[in-house]
Structures are given as C-alpha cells and as structure tokens.
Amino acid sequence: MRSGSHTVTRMTAHIVWVTKYRYPVLKGDIQVRCRELIVQICDNEDVRILKGVVSKDHVHMHLEYPTKLAISDLVKCLKGRTSCLLQQEFLELGKRYWGNHFWAIGYGAWSTGNITDELVQKYLEHHRNPSNSEENNIILE
Image 1 (tube, rainbow, N blue to C red):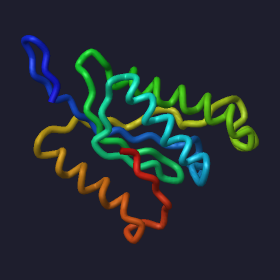
Image 2: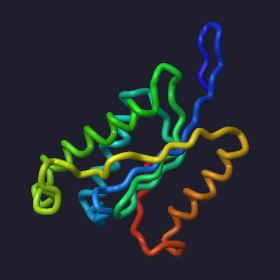
Image 3: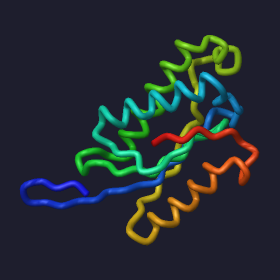
Image 4: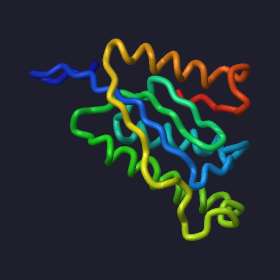
C-alpha cells in the first residue's frame, strides 16, 4: 500500500514480455545480469516487485507501482535499458540480434486486484518451481 497526505493506493499489475523471435538467450550470466538490471530499474522507478521470474525467453513480473507512473512508460524503460545494457555487455548477443533489437515488440499487461493477485502469485510460483517447467528460471524479487 502506498499513502499520501490524502490518498491510499495499491496499483498492481502482471507484466510479461519476450525476447525477439523467442530465442532462449536469457541463460547463465545474461539471465543473472538481466535480473540485476530489472531490480535496479524498479528500485529507481519506485516500483516494488511482488514476484517475478526471468525465464530463458521471457520475463514475468507481478509488481506494485506508484500512480504517477504509466505501465507503458515502465515497460518502455525496462525493455529499453535492459536491451541496451545487455547488448553492450554481452557482445555475443549481436550475432543473433542485429539492429539492436533484443526484445520483441509489445508486451502483455494485466491489472490485478485482491482476488487476481492470488491467481498471479500461484501462476508465478508454478514458473518458479523447476519441476513444473523445463526452463531454468531465475527469481526476480
């Protein structure tokens, strides 16, 4: 919950975005660095990660954000900064992603509330458990 002098808010959303062509490049050091960058960006933007997973070809986040921040601006910031920095730090990504496009165009975003928060949490728990998935996931929060 966030509160101001005359307000109390709890804005939450579930966000998903994928790598271009869904290439499974978010592995090892790239995956770890992607997680670090996402956490840093969220801290800078006053966004609280409730749950999240960096999978081999996509990112899931359930987050709480301030009312002054539009989801579209947040995703633009997350995708833009991580794309730029990952491609600068891991030159091997340039072999797959010419033209500096790391993430696919678009994203999925769903607002959540008291009831849907629980469903999203269960969904992300499923992705966090390696026995439920072939992927090696790295947890965001």
